[in-house]
Length: 317
Image 1: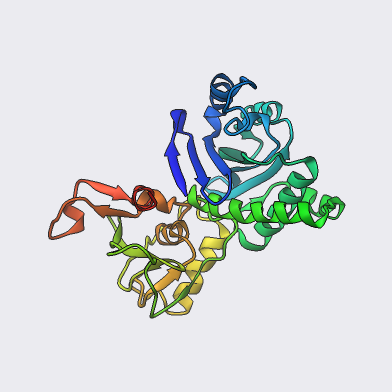
Image 2 (image 1 turned 90 degrees about the horizontal axis):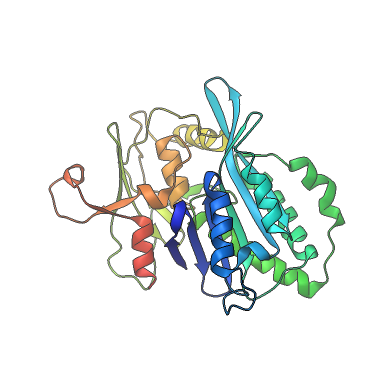
């Protein structure tokens, strides 16, 4: 997997096993991203026009934002869409930063660079992502009704369906790598957990706040939070129903004690899931889990850090 930062807050994430990529774009910068893509790769005679130019390819995308449910409460919201005219479609989304009770923050655009999806492919991918979201996510799917009405209308032959289903699995990986656990379950308790194979000396990562501190490490099965780690006692506006319910369940099951600390090691599916549960709100685990770059008696005294995302980028090279 390859992660790189681009201009205007855009993050590119690409998988090495297939020519699939995802662009995470702040909604405020979407129009600038479109213009940059046109300037850089818009020449169809360019060697890059068929491999890097996502604004000219049929693709699937997800909008991430919040829904205001009360004056002091927001719930996560997502919109899953597809288009074979990305330029026109994304221009319309750029104009809906605030739409009624919804506020949109990011858009992730998914495309294949070695394969041109047709309308059937992207419809199949879109509808199945909607179903996965409804089954796993605590966020409100704003176009859920559309999913129910049109899922049965999508038909593909086996070869095309296999291509589309393979890319759905890639989208799940790319989405999580870009900080959203939209398609995943939460986690499980475990006393024994193997570190990631092929990487020696997996470091301990810290999540430090003024009112708590937590520590954990990536494993083969997710991200393990170690016994003694604390959690925030406050749930922010972005703490969706899924996270609230999981926090309650962890306390009910005794995984988190009355002192708001983990009583045993617990394996979360992804680092962002762990961070969101611990912080009491939607949190990008790749940014908040960190290892110190200097030795000190206490992690709280460290001033220079490497994020989990940076560490993953270095170890994958």
